Image 1: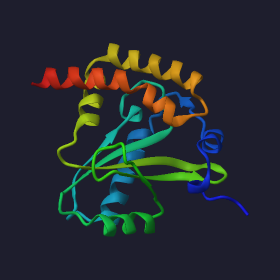
Image 2: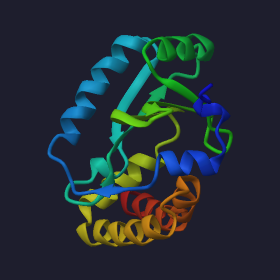
Image 3: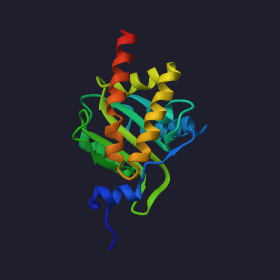
Image 4: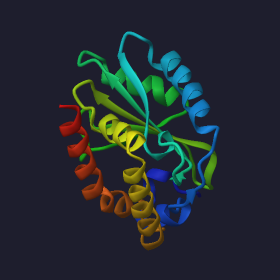
Amino acid sequence: MAKNLSDMTPEELGKLFPVQLSAPKETWPELFLDAREKLIRLMGTENILNIEHIGSTAIPGILAKDTIDILVQISASAGIPELKTKMENGGFICLPQPRKPPPHMMFVSGYTIRGFVGQAYHVHIRYSSDNDEIYFRDYLIAHSSAAREYEAVKTRLAEVHKYNRDTYTDAKGDFIRRITALAKKETG
């Protein structure tokens, strides 16, 4: 009997979903817009305060994992159990994120026990007060030298941590925190 993704070890998941960077694709913004519409239909406008394309696919011209990262900011009064049910009924898998800001969850699609199938999406759910990903994205868009530096960091880490996505992500943390702090300082 095949395992569920939730039953797999980090090593098994790493082999199934290695860190692979791809050249920038013109379709990434369009894929975000399509997903945005789907999320609005699934979640309903009453809970959504903002939906943003974040992550490397939102930065023009740099290498990225072919995953569309989306930040959905919700109201504090949003019903989390109902939201979770709607997203799961829409084909997303809920991943608890205890180390991330409240409400500590992310939804993914494109992941199967056979590896990636179709376009991969990460939908990060946050309350409206958490904007770090937006600061980071906007700074890299405005500062091409920082975007290139980030691309170099990602390239090096993807080689070293190809089969461990969590370590790859954690290893980018210092760079991301430094750039986010610069972005906040710059915007005052």
